[in-house]
Image (cartoon, rainbow, N blue to C red):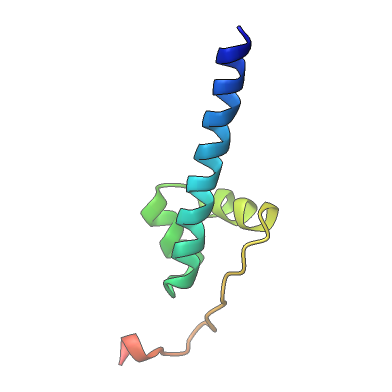
Amino acid sequence: MTTSHSSWYALRERQHKERLEQVETLAQSRLTQTQAAQRLGVKLQTLNRFIILNDINWPVKKQGQKTNDQK
């Protein structure tokens, strides 16, 4: 029983690390959090809570300003 218990926690830890890496990659991809949430298939509030809880730096785009991609 101890083996399955430790396996469960190892799996949860691996899944958390994978989610963390995925969200950090999206944060650096210059997407907005809204766009990232849509890609991930989660609510914006869920993504935002994950970002806050994991202290992820997400560069903020100023609304209404064009980026080089939009020219």
